[in-house]
Image (cartoon, rainbow, N blue to C red):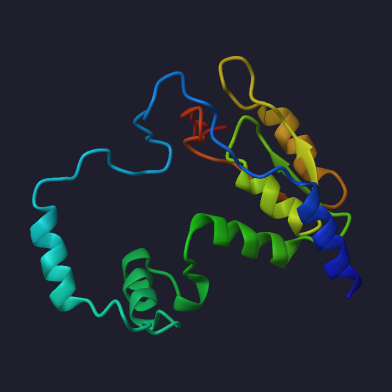
Length: 171
C-alpha cells in the first residue's frame, strides 16, 4: 500500500501535457500523427472496414497471431514481443517493470514528455542530459549518467521528438 501512496503523490506532482498556444486559429498539427486532409479512397476503406472488421467485439488479447507474424519477420521468439495499445502504455510498462522507489531514469530534453511523466508516476527519479544547441546528444555524459548508481532506464529517441535530430550509429 505504501508504494501506491507514493505513486499517487508522484502523479499529483506531474504537470499534465499541454500544447503550446498557437499564434493562428485552427493550426495544422502534425505532432500527433494525424492527417489534416483525408486521403483519397478513405470512404471506400471505411466501408470495407465496416463489413470486414467487427469493431463491436474485443479481439484476442494475447495477440498470438500478430506475435507469430512479427516473430517470423524479425526472426525472434514470440516471448520477446510485447504488444501495447500505444507508446505511452509501453513506457508505463517499462517504468513499472524496472523502477523501484529511488531508482533513476535518464532523458535528453527537449524530448517526449511522457518518459518523464510515466517514470515519475512510477516512482522514478529524473536525471537529464540536455541536448546541445544543435540538438545533438552528449554521448560521454549519457554514458556517465547511465553508469551511475540506481540508474535503471535510459531513453534514447532516434529520431528525437520534437527536434527530429538523430544519433549516429557509431555514437
